[in-house]
Image (cartoon, rainbow, N blue to C red):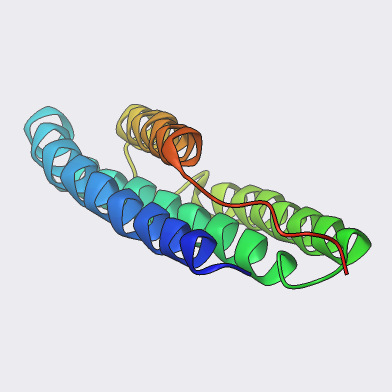
Length: 135
């Protein structure tokens, strides 16, 4: 994998973390104002989950990029399945929790996911990664 590609993954994780941190701060304050402590906790859980997702995505693409094409798709699909299963299990565990504000958690997750998708898209579109010849 080229140095440009490695730098891209570092930027994705760094900017994704900064965005999720800002969303945690703003969402935490707004959640606290709307729903007191359950709102704050919900915003922090939503932002933390988004950070885990953005990190797993970058990590799976980075690891997969070192493998042949079949291995790449296997690692990326495995990471995606891990995220889906983890999300379903976490939402199932938090479904009836009294310390969660559902709307705050939902809107924090939506803001975090849309924001990290935008960061990923912009960084990949602006990346200057040279094409390496096949061996």
